[in-house]
Length: 167
Image 1 (cartoon, rainbow, N blue to C red):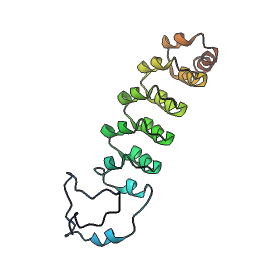
Image 2 (image 1 turned 30 degrees about the vertical axis):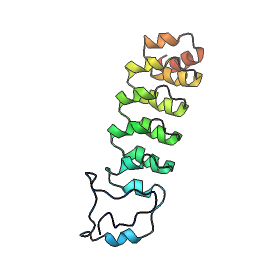
Image 3 (image 1 turned 90 degrees about the vertical axis):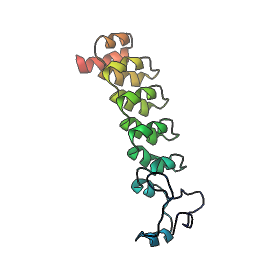
Image 4 (image 1 turned 45 degrees about the vertical axis):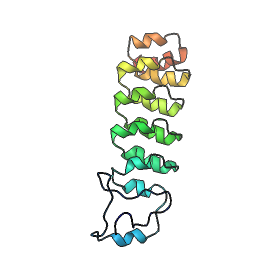
């Protein structure tokens, strides 16, 4: 049974080998499992081969994309930065390399910005001082070091927070 003869549900991804070519299932001992009902939700994304994951990036189920955010290689993880679901973006912020996190500094979601601020290198934190959210600036002040901390000296709430840690 070659991939051309394989039963593929409408809209599903046709099976391909690791180089992207068609699969030949004739010699496979597990070919009978192709006739089982299809799985739904994130289970396939949890167990799919890493080479199949990019094809799932457009999946409408946020649980599938959440699994992708946990499993995608770093080179492809940035494709989920602007995902519509908050939990997916938070997982991306938790996994992205510090250099790639720079692109997430200005996202609108407070929780995502907080993860970015926790993981950004100290040298890049001063770029987030102008954040409009006072609570976020307070959290940011906890990580800032002097001379950058002086830039928010007029922000009494952030200053109080920094004083607790450094004072």
